[in-house]
Image 1 (cartoon, helix red, strand yellow):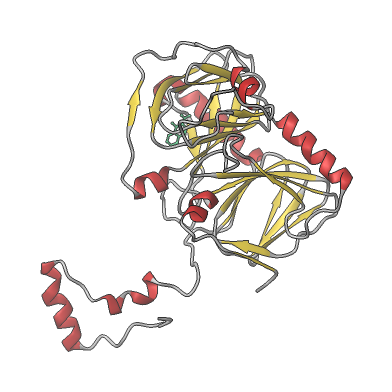
Image 2: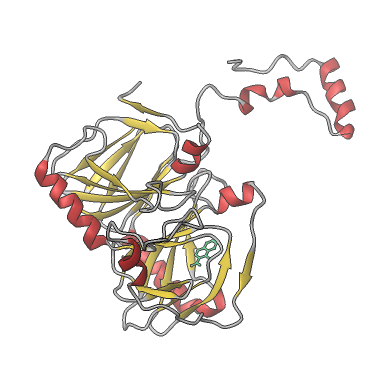
Length: 349
Ligand code: 1HN
């Protein structure tokens, strides 16, 4: 099974392959080694987008097209190893979305799930199924599959967030549906903060049972998550591979907050070096606080706040924090875990 090379392609065999091709047939033995590899060989490359370099391009896009005309004014983060695919890893989409003061990104819904990780600006809103939430830097906001959503910026500053979506997963399975809402914004039917009060305080409404797989909390405010990390960092030693790392959960199930995308927040103390680690879920990171670098295989990615970088599947990586740092990250880990595919390895093994 670990054939590194295909058997020799003799003229007689080649003639046979040509002969059967019109019948939509082909020999597996020519392809086996690339279809079934001994370990993951992601086409995605380690890469980093420095926010100070990307921001001017985003602002430029803001002068070229309105959010309304674009539907979503997003610059996609194109993994340089993926040949122009709209993907940051083999399975996930990432992009930076800009909403200028006074703009609206019109309501629509789709089967792809989206996360927003807020990078810049204060107080623009996203509305999900009749409730608006105001967004602050570091907040993790969810748009569950098939929920109406629109965004708007009633503030005086540009608002930028990172969009993470399971576009490639949904398309692999040919399960994409989408439609526009008849109006540009959906009616607001619940006051701001309603979901957080009902579901975000270690309490659940009596007699409520989850109807969908996505967390009923759709904004995980940074202030609260950050406070948890600060207390952990004060109370004990960091994990050698992860620092102080927490995963965002659906409070109704204990599973990941989104069914297809796992999301994480970790604190690395000043001067801390994590030990080499790898896992099969290619992961997108956002540096929120601090400064440092991540060695991914032979590549060193140097990051500062608001930079976004990607660690492809199964590449050993280690973080170094020059100053106390906080990283947000997301990956397809819940999907791999559900399917029994997820693996990790500690050290250089
Ligand atoms: C989308 O609907 C949004 O709703 C953002 O804000 C990014 C990227 C690909 C496909 C749909 C949004 C998206 C997207």
